[in-house]
Image 1: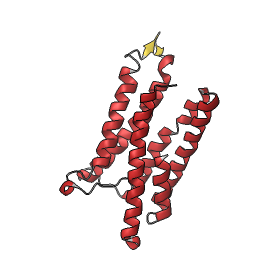
Image 2: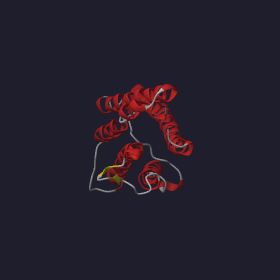
Image 3: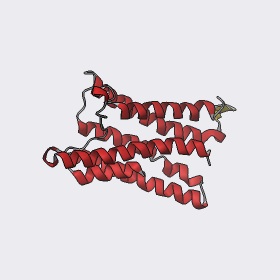
Image 4: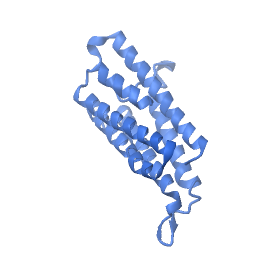
Length: 190
C-alpha cells in the first residue's frame, strides 16, 4: 500500500473538484432549468474572469506534480532492472499512467477553451473525460494484488470509476439532463 500522504493529497483534490462540480450543477439548474446543459468542468466566476479556468489549472498542476512524484521521486529513477521494468515500482507506473490521462484531459480542455486551435463541443469533452476515467479503471488490475480490507476498498473504487464512465458518456448522449450531470458530479466526488 502507498503512503498516507500519497493517497490523501490526490484524494483531497478529487474531493474538492467533486464538491465544486456538485455545487455548480445545482446552481446552474436552479438558476435556469430551461437552458441547463451538462458540463465536464465549471468556470470560477470571481476576480473579473481571471480565474475562470481555475478548476482546469488545479487538475493539470495537481496531476503533473503527483505524476512527477510517482514517476521520479517514488521510483528513485530506477525504471529498469536487468533490461525490464522494475517490478517494485509497477504501482507507481500505474498511478503515473492514470495521472497522465487527467493531465492530458485538463490541457485538452484548456486548449479548447482558451484557443481556437482545438474548439471542441461539450459532448466531445464528455467523451474525452470518459476516456480519462477509463484509464483510471486500471484500478481493476491494480486491485488484483490487494487482499482484505484494501482489496474491498479498491473494488469500491473500481465500481465508482465505472459509474463515472457511464455517467459522463450519458452526459454526451443527454446533454440537457440534470440527473445525469448530478450523477456524474456525485460519482466524481467519491
